[in-house]
Length: 233
Length: 315
Image 1 (cartoon, each protein chain N blue to C red):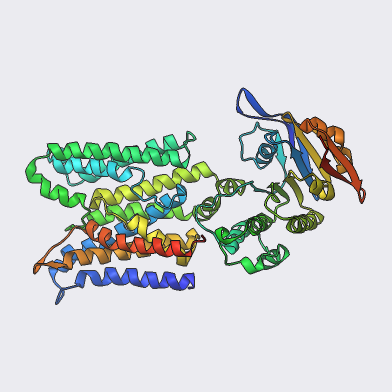
Image 2: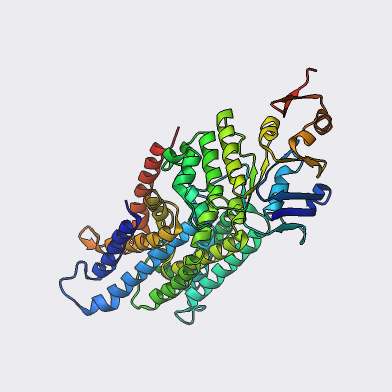
């Protein structure tokens, strides 16, 4: 079972294609990172996979429920954490909200509203809401952008446990070291297409990163995992 | 407070107002109660509920706390249609002419807004279109007032302030028919409205057809408003006040908010109407148009809600 895009093209205006003949596959049970420079089309790819943007027929194929969490959420009222999670749980039967909140360490925040939370707490509440949908495929757009390292680690460990239960998760992320540590596969988006896809060792190389960003990047290894840092100019 | 308990309390309040209003101030049952007060209370009950639900829908769909049933210009266009008939009796050959022309103007406005709404205007764009329509029909209304025969002005002014004076059940049935139809439609969309009020993109990803929901919601809210305005004139504040008053207790679930808004709105308007016909000014029955009472009572109440909310908000 997989979520696939084949020969996917998308443009907001005819002169400026965002995705051009792009193919992508998210397999069940994998944590798949989508990385690339700003404006390279990562978020657009997620929205096409979630079928939020008008794409040509027979370019996106999904055999099961897909959940999506955008980069920013704009609720028109101030929802409480519990209400947000209940909205997600409406779509699935048998979701144990208490257990989920415990796993994300937000059970003490149940009655607090989103505006009363710190950036990290808010992000964890939103991730809990999409996990409550019990999807087979989960698309997360920069879910760790406002989390400190401790909570980033907690979040991706939790996502890994969901992957182990068979959920396929695609994450747009700018943190190469987090991607390196937790990704099963990484897709490199550049020039409207995926230029490289593979495990962290295959993708995170100084050549690929230099090609992507146009600047020198040092890739070393620690605990058999690639570690990325900018080179001295 | 438990939501079901609150709904039960609201239902008691709403039913008590319509049950007691016709008899309020009467020593014994009389023909006047059956022929005048009962139709008036019934019209007030259906109109108040309709305006409150229309306000809730507008606030959810436009994702704006300040949206009211009158925001999109539907009320001013319906007012214009009905007003033309009132001002020039030659046009209104039958008693159905004012509501009919009012409805036609309102439906044309709703169709225009839906058409413009589907062209990627966004929420602010739709709001701006509504404000523009409001101004245009407001100006058209002024022209009609200017040209209307002076002897018609008293009735017109009274109607423009929002008034529930009726001596038959027919206006109440018009509003009731529109209300039942619209409520039946919007009740099927209650879960979609919940998802939509959280986030549009997330709602779309969860299978909500956002553009269809917007069209259905705007049409329903517009019809509810048009039905009330053509029968009673523009009645202020209910559509704004009632959803705001209930949200802190009910939350965001439309499963509870829709019936709660209906019950509080209907009860509140019957209460305000009873107050308007019972108030004695200089020892005489004043029969102030109910729109003035709702604004006078609703304004300070709304202010209190806003102040309370701002105290709770994080700084």
